[in-house]
Image (tube, rainbow, N blue to C red; front, top):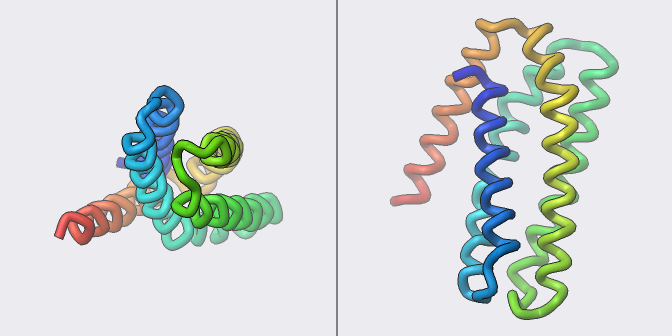
Length: 150
């Protein structure tokens, strides 16, 4: 699977979790979904930061550098919100507000990646490199999932 397809698949999974979180009324279930979102985002961020973004930087264009720097900052803000969520009671109205902010941050980030960064990477890095990156990313994702299950 090419790198951008794997990242898009992860984006859809997180979007689905956010929709589930919005629909549930049960505080315990809401907390479980938030935990699943946090786990998925942490793995996704690790894959992007360790494999995909360094490859995008290889393009050595000012636009690529700018997009990667902005993406790192967006990840940082998401991490800040994720760090606060476990401290907030799922029945507290602040929990829903923080989840909304997190969802909007992620949505904005996904939009920029899928509309700008991914097409540029596919064009400039080429199909073979995208496939190689995708294989490395799948290995990291599979390894992380195995460690979590252990």
